Image 1 (cartoon, rainbow, N blue to C red):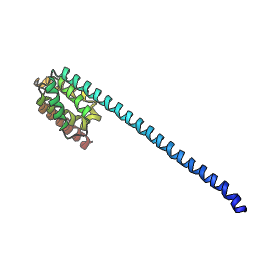
Image 2: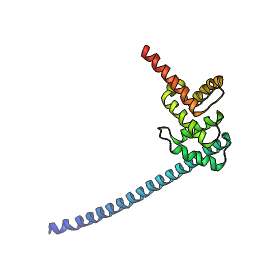
Image 3: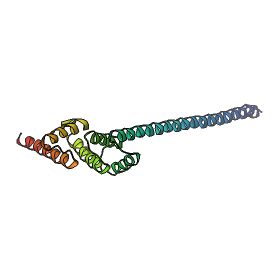
Image 4: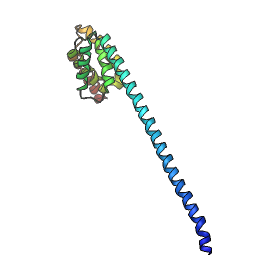
Length: 171
């Protein structure tokens, strides 16, 4: 009799716990859905922001380099092929420096950007940012022959690296 007397409340508590577990599972599912939706919205906002930044960079490059939309898209595709640790945004900024230096045409801007990128990677700490390197070396090149090309920039950059290495070696 006492066992039967305890059995009824035990069944009631099992039912209550079962209901509690079911409710907790339902709330966990709602929370997971909310976090998933929040993540999805955040990802969507990042995508919109990235596309706006890309559009602004390409528009600036088109304006500064006096390029058509087709040319700027071709330039962006050629920059994407460069083997470098520099981000695409960084490469587009270097291409703008090339255009500011008077480099014209997609192929020439790509070559200059590649040369400037190598110098920034190697000499960035010593000579400063891309704008400083491009304008400084451009001024030196103008003094000697007035030509600012990727080849001349690379040649001058290599000469500076060689001098720096000799200075370090002779201490």
